[in-house]
Image (cartoon, rainbow, N blue to C red):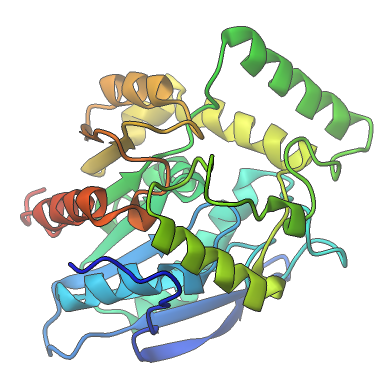
Length: 316
């Protein structure tokens, strides 16, 4: 694969279908479905984004998946991208509860994937999207054949004291009615940092491409996480670590860990895989958090692992 030039932006593969669907509680979710030309595809991959990501960011990855023989369905979570936001101020990264993300996923499955996408179905998810995949996995067991999870958000890095203080602060702010207060970062314009020192990718070209996209389409971007979002995230993390939830999570799952990740806790990922009998772990040494936005050396390893694990065999 050739290295992406500094400002090159891959074209989205031609969409088979795109538009909006409404959740039961009234949020409009933007979605897109991409089909490859074979009459009998390998299946459909449902691509779940991380926090502060949108459909456009994954054009390159969608193109790779389509070339590999898959159809791809993807969408923007409520509160980000081109889906409905919670407030007129579009910047805060907000959600009340990860059950709302679970509702988003169920809506997309019911309204888009099942009627319009060709089986079998697989999930590819990154970071926050990977946490949602684990959160909903017991309900997806009769729909999804396999999952590949990139750098799942299963805790924040740092000392036990730092993590405990972060939990306490987020829950306290939400309790006193300040759930919309930023607990990290700030407005979207302040989140656009220079490449040097970024924690997301070692690839300057892809980083520049994504930064240019954010500048050209600021309506799709998001600011930092709020207290409510952070408190909900910690509650979702606790939920997926419960013994009864682990026992019900039986979809064969490949978890890919970025060896140089400083955004999510690799220790928490390793511990979770150890407890989750349906999961196996692959570490890509040297990769930063956004593996699908990484340099070719790391990204190609990820794609090779994905194509080896999916579709798998009919018996799992």
